[in-house]
Image 1 (cartoon, rainbow, N blue to C red):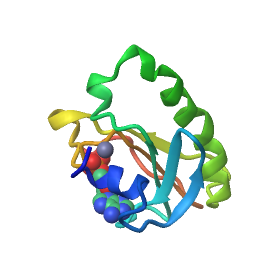
Image 2 (cartoon, protein in one colour):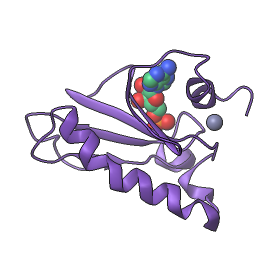
Image 3 (cartoon, rainbow, N blue to C red):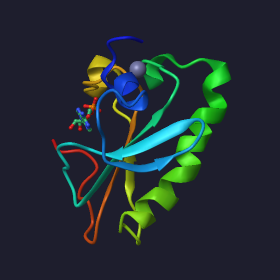
Image 4 (cartoon, helix red, strand yellow):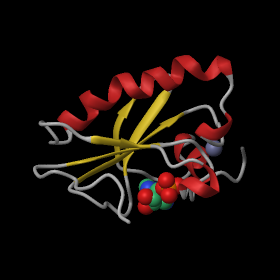
Length: 115
Ligand code: AMP
Ligand code: ZN
């Protein structure tokens, strides 16, 4: 995906504050952190949204979940964290490359949804 922002970050064409990387996934700090810990975890392979993933993407999605706790702890969110995957227009997704937000820090992140 030539013009995708997070594909450009994966390819190293746009800098990021990297916190974890392996063959399948990349994690980097959100540029506008909403909590003391705010990390984005993306599959290196472009996939647009959790609203439209393919069966063959199951393993990398599992990898994102499996690594989230380790990344959160390493960033200083030692007593838990929240994982958010905004999906599609209804979910408020702004960047069309699937990403999971890890949010946390020393204090509770707050109510799940604001009314
Ligand atoms: P979403 O609304 O779920 O699509 O979230 C997109 C997130 O990407 C927002 O929290 C932005 O602050 C973040 N973001 C946008 N551009 C960058 C960037 N270049 N590096 C890191 N985070 C970014
Ligand atoms: Zn992409």
